Image (cartoon, rainbow, N blue to C red; front, side, top):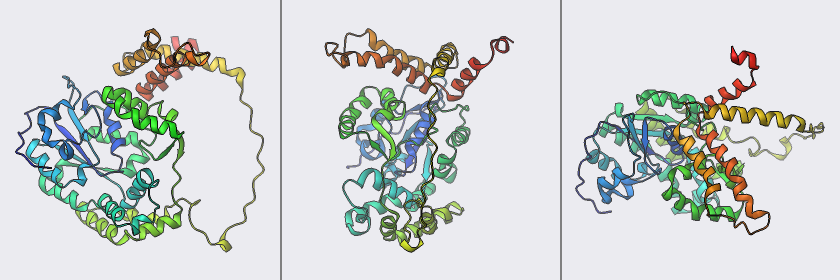
Length: 414
């Protein structure tokens, strides 16, 4: 890409947080922690990739990618896992942004490369290509190595301007990490609406047709309405498109063979990171990664395999359908109570009203002239509106109203 003298960013009171990556280290998950915060203006789409792919479009284009700021806005955020893979990004940030806050995610290179392979390369290449195919091997090394880039940013901007996010903390306690990150960024503590499950995990599409539809329609929806795109990708509609079951990866033996070809380079990179960070990264090492492979996948010699005796299972208990109307009534009361709570964010109300308004529009996704199926889209509008309202409302607030309606009426009055 040809370089050009870029104009400096306009003086702003709102600091800019730039999430640099690297890939498959939880950047999408962290983005979701910040996306719904009332004091954060994120980019309209995650991964606008200004500093690596659109720098020639100028700072004016970049400013247009952010959501509008309000008097309450304390921070703007731009996150892309590809920034760390481009050596030119560091200099471009330094020349274009005054006093940026930089965020780098940390995760074992072995874990990241395996996650990248399973999500993006498994359909094209056998895992042995990580060691045997020069192109795939070089790509894996580029993705896995972070010490050089981290050192480059620390030297250029100073350690106090670099925030490190540990993927292990993110996975173990996303709510706790969100609160610590909010304190570090001088934000008010707000519970993210939905981050308790892993975001952007390697899971299967329910069918090849849904996969093609998602690939074709996703970019269009993302461009027209980023809010709807994120609701579809991370909200209730996610499980309609994706199966809950993760993509089945290679066997442990195949992983060991592939990672062995990367071991020397990755071990050296981990050592350099330990020196730069002043912390022990023993859990990242090859031996720990091998020990952490799923027991069901771990290679076991035939003679050492235990004899398995299938346990006798008791018949599954039948669901008590007689209690369903009472549970539904409680949920309806909780929803009604929640709808009047002033703490419910406006985006939850607007999204649910927009979904329900489909009933009033003349446009039909499924023509009504088709018997039975013609009214399925209208039938789904209200459940979708309710699902969006609950998903975009703080989970603690929803739980509070559910507990309130379950209390005896005399205790509620008291």
